[in-house]
Amino acid sequence: MKIGSRYSILYSIKNQRGKVVYYEGRNPKENFNNDQLEEDWPNIPLKIREFYKNVHNGFYYYPSKSMGLDPLEEVTYLDEYEWGILEDIGEENLKIDLSSSYGFFSNGMGTYVVIDYKNCDHGNAALWSSKVEPEYNLKFWDVVDEWMVIGFE
Image 1 (tube, rainbow, N blue to C red):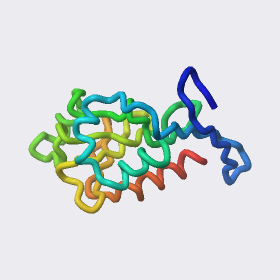
Image 2 (image 1 turned 45 degrees about the vertical axis):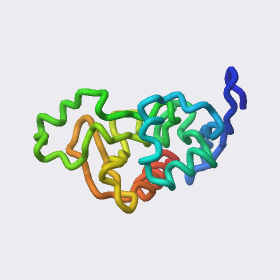
Image 3 (image 1 turned 180 degrees about the vertical axis):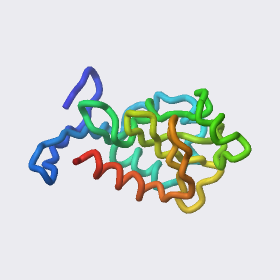
Image 4 (image 1 turned 90 degrees about the vertical axis):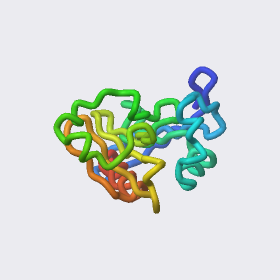
């Protein structure tokens, strides 16, 4: 499909209940449009970069533009925001560096699958939320897959 000057693929997926849900996969050849992420892009794990370069520039539930991998221009740089959850957990207990952390997956309600490129050996990610304590040392693609299936339901 074409929206303005942008091209995407619109997927219609029939879920287990027989309902058709729509997912957008943006063109991987789009301009980057995220200066901070572009600067840090070489540090992001190769499999994530390859997905964005060769498959789609984001893949998400079309009506809400969430519950999936965000397009590069929408990837959340954690250090740009004030997170009230830091008061609850204490910065000394934080196991990621916000200045090197990006939320690539968003559920649309304040939860992200985050890569801290300084601390992501073997694809480790964190499940970051504005409301609950983060979960650490999760496998990025495993969490993305699980949440995508939830979105299909």
